[in-house]
Image 1 (cartoon, rainbow, N blue to C red):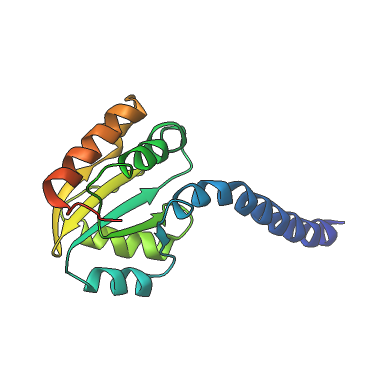
Image 2 (image 1 turned 180 degrees about the vertical axis):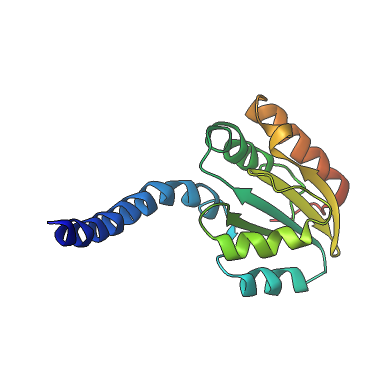
Length: 159
């Protein structure tokens, strides 16, 4: 009986992981549907970060309530701004562990934080919003902080 439980347990674990991925996908889609490139490997992070021209907006996504209720909605609002980053990229903390760990190597002297936002200009980190800047706030206030960063460091987009 114990051997059967292990086999059944392995199947259950697999089904639980599939279900968890199904639950996470909409959280990923909230960013990819508005133009973000999802980075799932360290190599993809390195490729993006090798391009030091212009601006790169990096979102560390998360499953927490402040990510869903504040961070992702704030990002969508902020991208309505006239000035926007050249590149929009994201990693998913707790899911894409290798990519997230590599991305955090570029966030020098920063404690791990998710959700969080990082803006790079010409390869230099110029703006950061940590979880502590997001949690307990409102999406419109966080969007305003992001727009202020975009206004300072990003070029106006022409259609």
